[in-house]
Image (cartoon, rainbow, N blue to C red):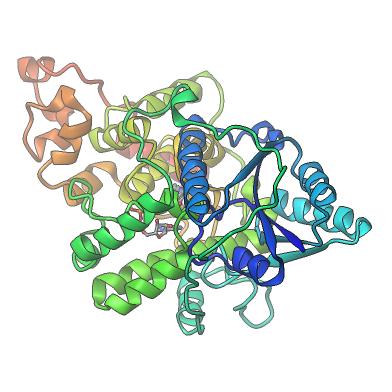
Length: 456
Ligand code: FAD
């Protein structure tokens, strides 16, 4: 018998329930990845993610190769490609990890229908991409949690399975055609500092980070220059590292740092269960508050300055430039740049989310759109009117100015705290720095925010 394992955002061999189930039930398995143009059309084919994806596919092919198998890559409509392969190999099972986006759900439905006609069974596995699948914990009277803390309490008490080991052997039927593996080197416009992708890299990173920074994380995760967070987000986004395994390994290690890291991983599941219940929140306000975002030429110019990292607020510009250079941004940077765009410049969160998705290597529908909504006050934040002050944020989370000087070299000659407020310099001192004045004064921004939400 033959089974097909359709890989999507679960590009690994360790802790992979669909692969394990397929190997348990069939003599031969086709590990398949389909490069679907529908994903490109939806605007998700950003260069950084394609490059990281290429690394992941190459690494997965190598890992399967070590076990006697290989990865089959196809291009085209996923459902048609799976169907063709099922017919060719006479497979009677297809295994797939469950998804939460509207796109993933529709794909599952189409697959189920088409495979049924061919007498082939579709198995959709939960708990492959997330730790606790959406819907496993719900509050009374609702299909999802809208507040994080009670969700976390329930989530943390859920019993978890033991992570699965990688299979010893994977036998792939002969005569199955594959496209050539994509290569990162063939992709244009990749950020120069983009991390290397793949399961091997991700596993190394998880192990070395837990040893080196697992303890410091609780105290220092917001330290912009210290950069002690795990940087596992792209590996988790592509499923090169299992979130469940990351939780289990952190818990085994123990300590306050490890528990703080587990709590962050819970945020990932939190947003996934919101999106699973409200797929429309990928584009529409989860909690509609207003529709009075600034538009027009002034707003367009401000948006361009924000994207390019020349707002005149050093910590905002530093974070935006880190994003362009690495295809990744520190969480504190994401919070303060998103707050600046939506609450100080008063520009629609969708504009910012789009720019992030164009560049972020971990750009993810659930995490990106719902974090943007959280910051913009249209999402699940219970204090939707809080505004982050970029000067205070800079002084607090980059007290020595190291992060700003790293990313905004025009200000390299300035110490802290002056580096966070270069406009306070006067005369020739100010003229020595080729750096823009702030786009807007913070009190003007606050005033605009108050007016916008109709409270002044
Ligand atoms: P760590 O601090 O080491 O945390 C470990 C893991 O926990 C992360 O890898 C991530 O999977 C998860 N996590 C941490 N914080 C969050 C959070 N707030 N929400 C959801 N999961 C979290 N994360 C993405 O993975 N993709 C996105 O597209 C994305 N867009 C964001 C947009 C905005 C405006 C904001 C404020 C946050 C966004 N985040 C996103 C969440 C968070 O910023 C990143 O997950 C984190 O910075 C990744 O770095 P790390 O792996 O070093 O995190």
